Length: 378
Image (cartoon, rainbow, N blue to C red; front, side, top):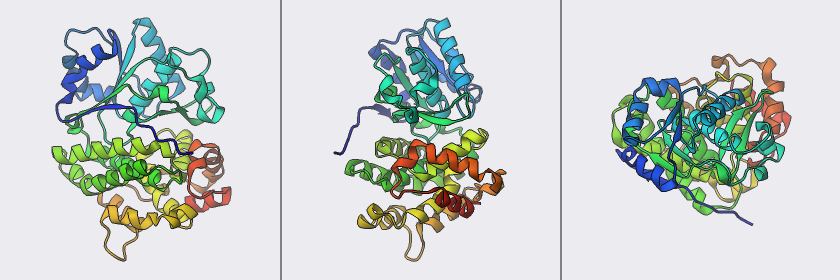
C-alpha cells in the first residue's frame, strides 16, 4: 500500500507575511508564543512579525540553539505556560521550527520527550491535543515548515525524529523577502540541504509518483538558482525558487530519506556545532555512489533522471557535479575539514544504524557500508 498525503496550507509569495494576523484569527490563536533565535531577532525579522500581528497579544521565546535540544524544549514549554499562550508562531530556520514543534507536543502531552521519538514508537502517542503551529521560515533549506517531523537532540545525546501528522504546521507563511538578508554561507549550506532532501526523497523506494515529481522539480529549481542566491542575496526570483525547492523537498519527506540523513543526524548528535546542510552536502556523493546498485534505483533509471533535472552534460556524474557545486559555494567538501576523525566512526555508525532514515534508504546499509561511505567523505 502507498500512503500519499498532502495537508499543509502554504501561503507563498513576497510580502505574504502581512497575512499573519489573519492566519492567527483563522486558527483561533489569540495569544501566540513566537519561537525564534537571537540571530533572527537581531536581523529585525521579529520586528516585521510584530508589525504583521498589529495590536494582537504575543509572547517571545528567543532561546533556540543551532541544533534544538530537549533542554531548549523544556525552556520553551515553561515560557509558553508562563504566558498562557494558546498557539505558536515559529520564525526562523529549521532549528526554530523544529523546536516549536517539540514545544507544541510537550506542552500538551505528559512525560519525557524521548517517548515521542519515532525510534521509540512514539508517533502514536502524539495526539490532536498538540498546540496549533504557524511556521514562518527565514531560510530555504530544511522545509520544516511543511514537514511532519522535528529533529531534536535528547538529554541522552541521541538526535531523534519526533514524527506525526499532528506536528505539521497548520499554515506555512513562506515569504522570500525574509531570506534576503541571509548570509552567503548560510544560503549555501541551507540550499544544499534542500538539494539533499530533493535527491534523497526521490531515491527512496516507496511508491509515490506525486512526491517524485515534486522532488525533481524542487531539485531543478534549486540547482539553477542556488549560486545566484549565493552571489546576489537580493535576487528575489532566486530566493523565491530556493524557498520553493526547500518546501518541495519537505513535501516529499513522506517517502522517507536515507543514509545521508542517518549519518548526518548521528554526526549532529555527536557534535551539535556541525551544520546539518553542510554535512548533507559532503555525504551526498558517497551515498549516491552506494545507492546506484539499488534495485528500485536501477529499475526506474533514477540516477539518469536526477542528472536530467540538474541539466548535467554527458560524461558528468551526479556525484562529481555535487562536489563541484559545493566548491562553487565555498562549502567544505570533506568531513576532515570539519574536524571529524576516523576514531569517531564507530559512534557515528551506531547512531546511523538506529536512525529512522536508515530504514528508508533504497539499499540496506551495513555497518561496514557506512564506514566506507564515511571514508569516501573524509
